[in-house]
View 1 (cartoon, rainbow, N blue to C red):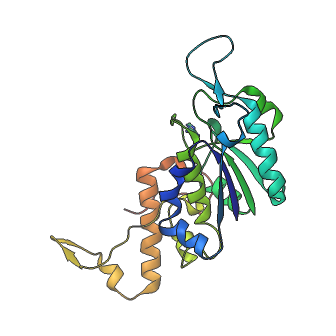
View 2 (cartoon, rainbow, N blue to C red):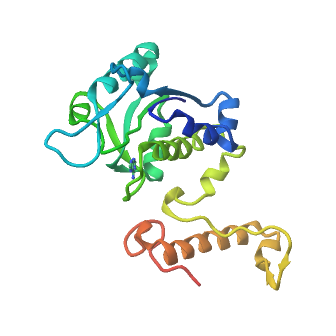
Length: 240
Ligand code: ADE
């Protein structure tokens, strides 16, 4: 996947992109991220990209010219962007969840536009075909952290990125339920012991225990994720 990010703070991405899974994904050639400085597209002698809002009020608004210029230039240099999706990070957008991340992970290209200040001039929204994406119902100081959340959530779903693709199938939110509890050594930690079933060697019993625990956790912590009362694979309360 190729991801182009247009931002006023490209250096914010460096630490995140150069560690752990995101670093490995780039080394494996599964992910390429190109960072573009919005300020470079300003036609102002001082590289200003914002101005005061018409009608008054606090804060500054990002001007349309640098955003249009950045998009046109980046798309001109990387025509494959046209095949993918163009997203703008905003608390007003569709909230990212596992299903949305899965959907985005099918794309070959993503373009992410990060905002700051009081937002973009409305003509950015009117003139550019951008999908708004939010990472939750709270306001961040800008779109950069949200863009990194999108990049991380999507990259780990790309084939071949995680060592074992099965780990996606067993983790939280996959099929709308939380992950089952995991244990490792020691067997006894300060009097808390690993459940006997996990040492039984009986794979069918282990599978059944894990499935039940996953449903129990989902039922206790995030009942909103699964409609336990109607349809679905399971319509009874978990056995506790
Ligand atoms: N920019 C500011 N807050 C945001 C949010 N919650 N999601 C995406 N972008 C944002």
